[in-house]
Amino acid sequence: MDIIQLVLNGLSVGSILALAAVGLTLTYGILRLSNFAHGDYMTLGAYVTWLCNSFGLNIWLSMVVGAFGTIGGMLIAEKLLWQPMRDKRATSTTLIIISIGLALFIRSGVLFIWGSGNQQYDLPVVKAINLTEMFGLPEAFGDIRIAYYRVVVMVMTLLVILGLHFVLQNSKIGKAMRAVADNIDLARVSGVDVERVVLWTWVITGSLTAIAGSMYGLITTVRPNMGWFLILPMFASVILGGIGNPYGAIAGAFVIGVAQEVSVAFLGPDYKLGVALLIMVALLFIRPQGLFKGTM
Image 1 (cartoon, rainbow, N blue to C red):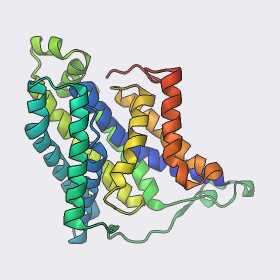
Image 2: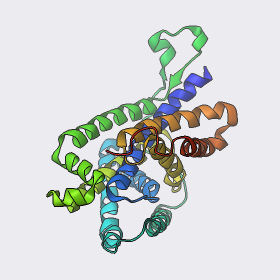
Image 3: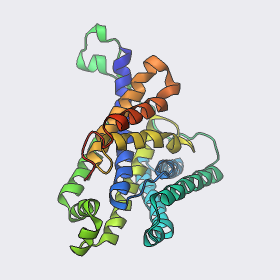
């Protein structure tokens, strides 16, 4: 059935949105920054991964290099932009405008270095997995297949989310991040090293964002504007799940991803972003705080 096929596609897209949305909600929850450059950092991670892969490096090692490259870009922006702005107590409007400018800068840099053409990873062609045969489904379900790399994306997302959960709930830095997200002033007077928390926030966010961008390249082409077109679904996921709640962002991402893909059967592929926007606006009217409590 076409709907089942679209739901499976939506789960893979939702997996990518989930990792990216978690990074976005962490930067807001801890740094109080609505980072519109987040999508373009995804693009940067995907391009660094593609560059390493094109020189013959294994795709998985290329993703690691892409993560380090993205983390480096985020730390440079932290040093040159965000830290000075925090010291000057810049308003949220100022920070949003700066982040939009940073997004344009990153995208222009990608275009200048790699051009406007689409790129693809050097990956072996793998036959799609026939779920109908694998699970012995009745003929009424039709021939349901899912691309091998979409399965890889979903499995990788699950592993990364489990790792993130361990870090946030059991490690010292995770507990410090939750303290800063709850009340930064109280955390500081309680002895939490806020600057260290900020550093680790960018490291975790950069890793998640780069992995999300690299995984998106596994199921589609790598192109300069890929992250920019994903920024609206990312924000929709964050708002749907409750701003500042990483687990809510994950749930919201899967809802948005599936809803976008299923809408193709009724509206066509051109209205996917409209579906994400509609869900976001509808939720703001009905439950402005999101589906879950907006804290870590």
